[in-house]
Image (cartoon, rainbow, N blue to C red; front, side):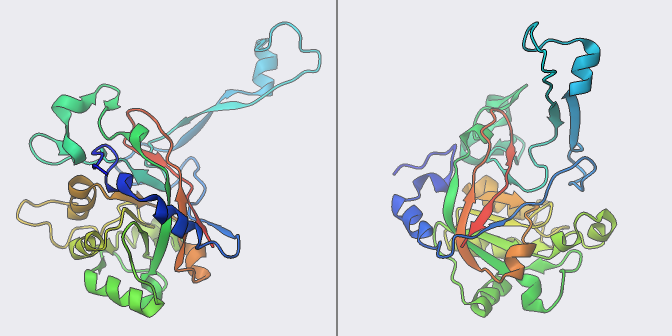
Length: 296
């Protein structure tokens, strides 16, 4: 199957993989991998705040004398509707392939670049409207449990050797087409912004990214706001502040998820499961809020 550069390697996933993943469901239990979003929630400081604003309320309709259904409403029927004003990267979310750019030409995965593909209404190549559903095998790597701590310390890298060691300790093997979720314990502090700030930000380093690429994963996620360890311990000769995003998302089309709530799935010691996530198809968006589940 030819590679669709607007979808990435996941677009070539064979149907047999979906069937194998479905076979992981033995008990019929679902574990949520997302926390609730709310105004004032902690976010990456480069994003706008999350807001929920009333647009229509029963009292507002009555006071304004509005007639959304026309003149007949003797029953006093009302309703509530709201604006949700937020970045698509609010809470648990998945980066679209067009999220990150690099170089003087500001290019991204699959041949997209700012001069050719970035409009006033967002990118038109590799945007969120192209993001596929995810239904495949998921693997959890619980690094704090492996280290014997509740939460990894600030700026603590997770390297390839540790990824392999966690797999061996948990008795799991990462395979092609998998989604690998890496717990740091950061969401155990949610939503205490001050406590979370004291632990910013552990995560995979470049060697871990290469380890994931070698195993053929199609997506990966952590419970932090940046996925990768920050500040980058090895920014390379060009001083790249996010070399892991560059290697996974920009260079190889491997989707990245951030701010996943991995506390319950880790508490239950579920290390292998059916992973399901359905991104919202919004044209021009650079990511999607998701509420993924682990099904066992």
